[in-house]
Image (cartoon, rainbow, N blue to C red):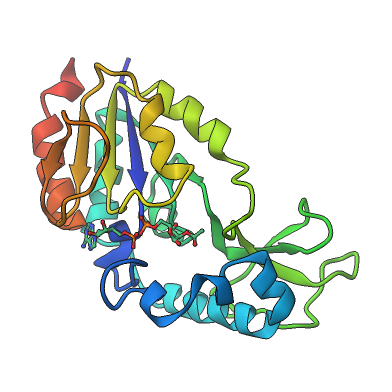
Amino acid sequence: MKKKLVILTGAGMSAESGISTFRDSGGLWDKYRVEDVATPEAFHRNPELVLEFYNIRRRELVNVKPNEGHLGIVELEKDFDVHIITQNVDNLHERAGSAHVLHLHGELMKVRSTRDESLIYELSADKPDIKMGDKCEKGYQLRPHIVWFGEAVPMISEAAEIAKQADIFVIIGTSMNVYPAAGLLDYVKRNVPVYLIDPKDVRTGRFDVHHIKKGASEGVKELRERLSDLGKG
Ligand code: OAD
């Protein structure tokens, strides 16, 4: 049986595709205030601004491609049972071809009803905008299918179950600042090897982390080399 390789990804995973991270200098949270664009209160106060923020993100996403890092993770499926838990709302893991992707913070290319959260719709790359007046089939305004700050993270229990079952755990491109995502490492068994791919130091709370201090593309290449023996066991 293949070993279960669980990979937690964040904004740094997609940086080399041309998508801004949040907390690096020049990142999104330098240009926008979280409380203006990524909270339920912001949407209540100024829905046009919030919708436009995500329209811009979507227009950006449809014009970029998965990078070598995303593609390298797909290659790992040959030897491992790979499960990705991503904080990213982009669809670059899926477009690269990864089979198991769990989105903790929602999905940019999806929108849902503000009244009935089971009514979820996928936007197409050639019509990536939504505006005030765009409604679900029951006549209620549509909103981004994104987990805003202050909202529950519905997928966290499923993600914790996956983290518990990891034989190898990898963290790529996340500053580990946002909970509950950052707390997933606590579910990983103590004897499980943990790898971190990030050009910067990241506080993980564990001292036995193997840090590959590189960007996602180069880092995943090195990870594949380092794991090549483990996959055969
Ligand atoms: P951050 O912007 O906080 O962290 C990005 C991480 O990526 C940092 O540790 C960088 O050093 C690293 N990084 C930068 N370039 C990289 C590269 N080329 N390769 C690999 N790593 C690189 O982003 P997240 O941790 O993902 O939530 O942020 C978590 C959440 O906060 C996001 O999902 C978003 C945000 O607010 C919501 O919007 C709900």
